[in-house]
Length: 223
Image (tube, rainbow, N blue to C red; front, top):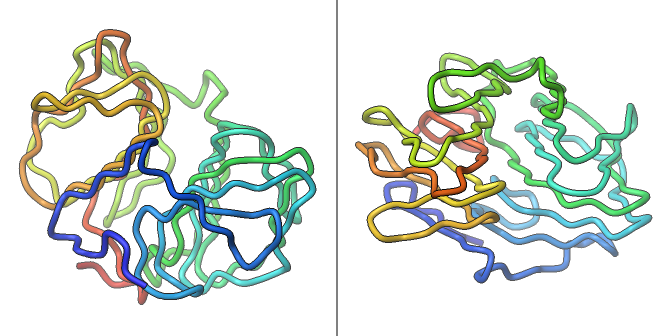
């Protein structure tokens, strides 16, 4: 299966484009944002757990990255309410579930082979944020290959400051504006390498997930 699989082109999925697809596990469905592969795929998705749903215990050979968007997501170790960022390295194993229901943003098989750090960040904590001019930044993960953060942008603040190796955005609140286009909360964008200076927060500001860096292949190599 190929969904937005050409990483040399801009990809955009707006909330009105969402198509919820049932997973093999009852009560769990997903919106496929990008995907290369069948059920075991290099994939970026929004996943929705119905109350009292779960996946059987399984491994993630290429790692897993999660941002909890709504509800409470759980694994073997803890419960994670909306706002938590989780990073499970290649080879990790868990049993994901949700008692109350949850919606999460998930990236699978997109970590480098040497990435062995487990990360848990509560982005609700004021101490996780730092103010920088017209934005507040919550750093989630940083390596030689990528930087992942949440941004709270003031009205009119630019997302980018110069050329990129690649970028991925999920609008969490507010809206982004670019060349006459409006990207409201729930919009997902993937931008290829180049210069993208015109993405700015709307009049009410914006809160976004932002990943900078060239996309990682399912085998842990860069593009």
